Amino acid sequence: MKRVLSIIFGMMFAVTAIAAQTLKVSAIPDEAPTELQRKFEPLGKYLEKAVGMKVEFTPVTDYAATVEALAAGKIDLVWYGGFTFVQAHIRTKGTAIPLVQREEDEKFRSVFIARADSGINKLADLKGKNFAFGSVSSTSGHLMPRSFMLNEGLNPDKDMRIAFSGAHDATALQVAGGKVEAGALNISVWEKLVAEKRIDTKQVRVFYTTPPYYDYNWTVRGNLDKAVIDKIRSAFLALDAKNPVHAEILKLQRATRFVPTRVENYKSIEQAARSAGLLK
Image (cartoon, rainbow, N blue to C red; front, side, top):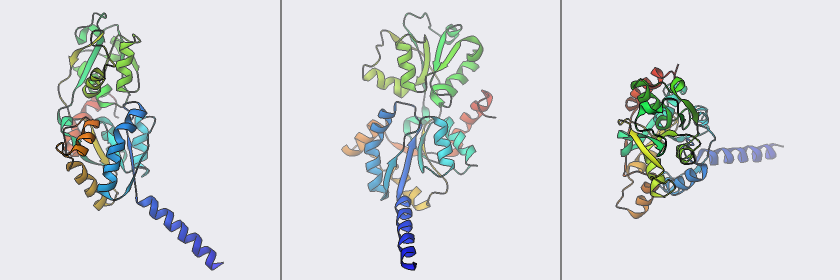
């Protein structure tokens, strides 16, 4: 009996050890799941070598799921938008750590797009129109566009008919398909869709680009082993566009390079969220 128990406990220890050696990663679903998986695959392989752990990517169905999973310790590393990071930071009682962001995220922007035949040329023209945001929890697809609208005296909830597409690419395609007359999304997804010729700029055009703000980052749970956190941070900071393998990773992440970030960078987003009534 003792021998059987010893074997069972040995197997349990082995399973626990394997789990502990797996870095569990996720990302907010701001694009189609297949696109997120494609973008992450080479980065995951790179992190496995750099950190010395198996890397497992887990897609989720909504933004809130990443916040809850990080708080519960079910995932270790998450690609967040600025607003979702703020939510995660609050939900984890300030323990979530923003590690790095793309250099582009220090001055990120959103674009407002409209069908060419809509007659929309400025924010005020959105009154009475059908308009699409991305996800409710999206920084660049909802919170910051809403904030800039409010600053211009435009109330999305009263002045237009709004809908939520769930993702940046979905917003653009809804405008292109005529489901709505206008929408807001992040500038990097817009540029990618145009470059891939998935959007015809003769039919859909940008009519307003927001001022810059801090946005996306890679965040870890605060109780992750410090040595692992340091390895993850160093791995991102070591990515160099002069290295062909690194260049491909950076291209997929739509980044020139990664730089350190900190909680203070996202205070303005927290303030905007509170002003818009999206944080209590």
